[in-house]
Image (cartoon, rainbow, N blue to C red; front, top):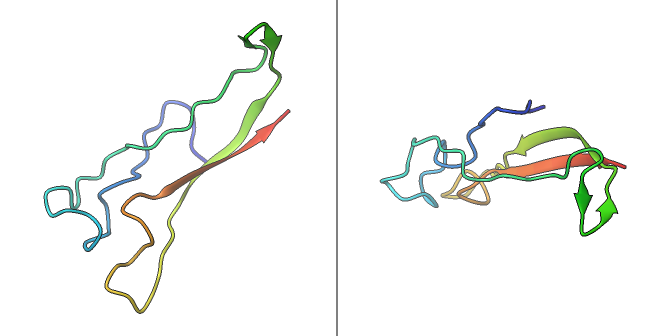
Length: 81
């Protein structure tokens, strides 16, 4: 799980075919998910959702020239109402 304030690597870590040579091993944090905080109002509606978990998903493949399905990792969250 990723804690608030963390900046995990989502791009430029392992993939060599899908990532340009200038970005290889640059280990950047380019992907984000923004969530509404508990009790925040949006458009006059009070939202009551809270992020339970957040994780980085590495979509690895074998037997191909590339080692993952994208040049970026996936970012997933579980939201509770």
